[in-house]
Length: 211
Image (cartoon, rainbow, N blue to C red):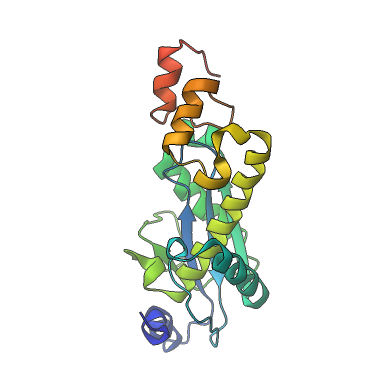
């Protein structure tokens, strides 16, 4: 998709004299460990970044470069982080919503309209549009996708320093063969999501009492 198409939603809103348009996206709904992370990004109208798209389609090196560029040029960025305990308490879908509200609240500039990747945020008092696969259709959501992914990936890289046996640096907490084998061999850590299979199965099989 070219940049003109990627700015379609934004340009429609600019034509209605809406200046501050935020893109909101999440990363980390599927992993067995760590938080769900969201970002809310407001870009300037003339923002340009060749190759920007859904962060999952970019190389790690390119994501890092884009992360720095977006941070430097965005009008405002808010981050939302909901940890594994809260995820276990309210479920991942509700935790993702909480993280999105948090990211929006953490934006220093209040958005006039919010473009959200797939999710609907019922408690928003700001006009919003939910876009399926929005990270590939909206430049603002694509930027939020990069900010959220790099933020979470760096958190998992730090966790990898403490627990290298789980290979978090490479799997980012997703249930790869190596990660699952490490759970069987070494057990689980506090950062594992206790309500997610196969973590939940491990707890039940080993009769572990989790707080």
